[in-house]
Image (cartoon, rainbow, N blue to C red; front, side):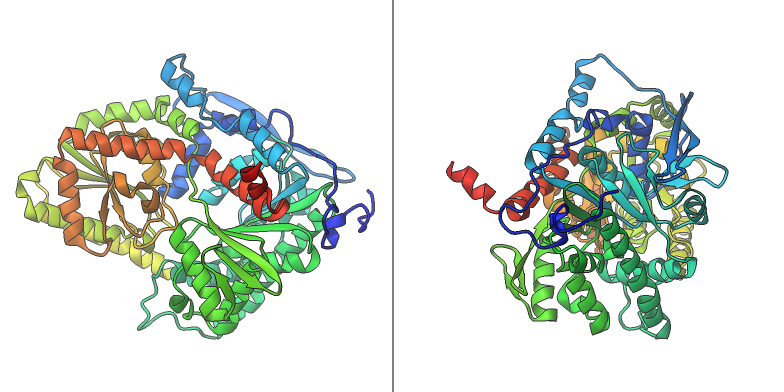
Length: 610
């Protein structure tokens, strides 16, 4: 291996004009054309994305899952070898109809690959996240990694030919590293993506993830703390910060630096989410010429709410993020809150017009890129055999009106208030009794955290009370299901009359986009004004304050009785927004800003005047 030096790795130092290497590594040929075929031709991949975003567990086996594919985790270095795996996949759902052909044309494909290659020809990409793209099963083989971050990054890694740095979170992952080394080919990605594991101790990971990341940061960023009583910042939290969160962030950054120093071109490091806020500045200290972006998938609260955290912690988070060139968010409100937080809590100069922070002679840009879904893969799943089977079952019991929701049992999802609003609907409109049913799919979430267990118990209790109080011999007001039900969830999204998405606060919420895309009943979406997706969809939904159950009940009723023409207009408008602002657009907007603001400053102005 060539020794990394300032001569052959210019980004080890801050490059000046003309110092960027001329070599173009390009992308792995044909990678982007195969994106929608990951694991199960895109269908199961998006099912797993639905599982996280809609908070239902993943069911990897659909009716028709008859094919068995082979893959391998290939370790690198001396004595490298492949670990054979078996992966269940679903048969391709192929149609020669003009509709499905038009869907296929929406896949992120060769044009997107060419765009990325042309736009960033001199960069080697490193994707950084808490979770990796796959999870080894104790009995052998691999499963797709759960999580919305993983889902989005799979497409990004494919298109950009990225290396991927992630934590070995489970004993199965740690065993894989012990046996085969920390780096290898990612078995569930069809490109030559290299996966590099970081191996914190179980104790470090527990403090980093299950104390600081969840619930402390998650609750702050979703405004969930009952501030009169919680949190209590005690010695346990201080220790978890110092010995857990800080240490794991240092380990992740060290791995990124190690990988970056061996890459053929200038590193472009794309860090993701709230678990890794300290990583950008740690990388900047050692790779000052790298391009660094951090995308935050959850809301960014006001500067006042950040003061729940002790000053050393919140300052470290901000300064960690300010090691970036660009900090990405889901909504323009998040951008404004971030700029205000830098100004108020750190006393830094910000430019609200340019959406930038000035720090030590550097400019750090803040931009919003609302994440989205892969239209082709989601549509394929919606038309899959398994979903069709569930739709036939639905016809046997479907009421006149169907209200649906798909969520994790996370307090931020506001499930209890949603059921209380439905109760108000039944009280105010008794004519709907026996005519409507609320069909909810819920995945138990983070049951190792007391607050989550308590919330799930409240969900069960309120459903039991409403069903007992309002139900009859032949009618149950709420149909509540927990667990693995991807096909049923998609059947519900295809057939709802009203979809309730009422989070207290949410970074984006992709269930609403999936529902808008696949629904075939011209269903109406009732959407919280505090969901990030509201910024894009507000003209095509019924907006609600998520705390107001009376107004939510009114919106549910309006959605149920709305005139057909108005329903059609709302449905088509929401669907068109999702089709336009798809996952490819999410990636290309980031790529363009990286080029215009960092990699080739002034490029946008030159194109505008040229």
